[in-house]
Every structure is written in C-alpha cells, then in structure tokens.
Image 1 (spheres, helix red, strand yellow):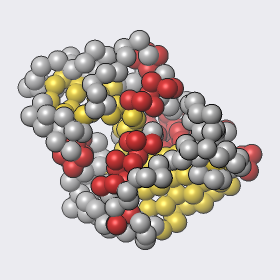
Image 2: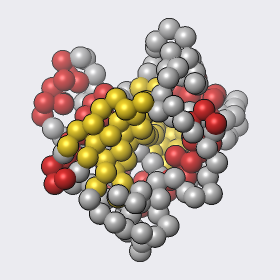
Image 3: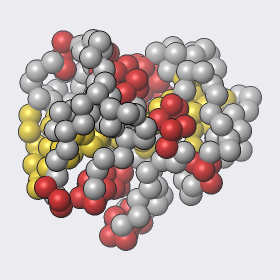
Length: 241
C-alpha cells in the first residue's frame, strides 16, 4: 500500500457509446466494446489485485471478465501473482445464485455487503483462520461492513491495493456519490444508442471532489475506431482528493 493510503486505488473500466450509454435502449447485457476494448480491459485486469462487480450485473451476464491474453497472463505469473484478479461481488441483498456460470470460472470469489452488519466477517475454507461463521455458497469469504469507507479499508487490510470497478450503474453511482473513484478508463465506441442506460444514472449525485480536476493520463486509438481515454485525479497519495 502506498504511503498515506488506507484503501485500494479504484479504477472504473467501461465501454460506452458516443452518447455515454452502456447498452442499447432496449436493455440487456452491456457488451458494446470490440476487440480493442477487450484488450485494454484485460490490461486493467492484469494491473489489478481484484475487481468489484455488482450482483445485478453478474446476474445479467452470468460470468465476469477473465484475462485470456497470453502475454498478460505471463506478466502476472512473472510477478508471482495469481492468473486472475480476485472477484469481489457487491450484493446488499445477500442473494447471488450459485447456478451462475460465474461459479465455475477459474478465480477466487468474495462477497461484499458495504451496508451490512459491520461486525460480520465470514469466511469459507480458503480464508485465514480466525474469521467467523461461513461464507455464502460459492464464496471463499464474505465482508459485511458499515459503509464504503470501512469496506475499502477491509479490502486494503486483506492486501488488495488496486481494484478495477466493472459496474454496473448502481455500483458506480454509489461510489461516485461518496467520491471513491480515482481513475476513469473509458473506451468510446463508435455507436449512438440513445435510451436510459447511461453509465452514470441521470439522477445520481456526484461528490464535489469528483466533479472537476480530472487529468488525461492516456489516449489510445484502438481497433475499429474505438478510443481509449484514461483519466485520474490529483491527490491519489491520500484517501480522497
């Protein structure tokens, strides 16, 4: 963990249309990115220790994203890291169907309830000794926290320094409202979709610290006229700018 930081760095990674939509107006899974977007998504997964994915988004897709590029898998192996980042499923309801293909994917799985009982931390067979009770079926560990600050601190204590946020919109909105995002990685896809499925819901509040001051760190033309834009914001040595 970097000096002065008590939580992981959070990078939001999304593919969006030119009008800022995640999915067609008719709805469905958000899968508008092409091959170039898939490459930069996997690059971010290779950078990360874990990824946050909303339970609703997981139900819609059935699986989470995996690193498949051989060079990225080799990078992680050379660094002594597991092939895939830890998948942290964010669910306030506590219901994640164990029949989803996600539970057959080759990666470790935790469940996080950022608004649950702050005294409750449960673990399954793969978690350290001393954790209490049993994690939900299919999960190695469960974290129940009293809000995002505590949740992120707990993830940091577990050794997670860099997290990719994969969505969906409700998860993103909750992080934006409290100012927790540090980086935005957006792949602009050459489509106009219309409709209500924006990456940030129109009624979502944005914390003052996130409203301005973003700095462009990378721009890259990808395949099929897709454009990668990656921004960060000042003050990343501390908890929030």
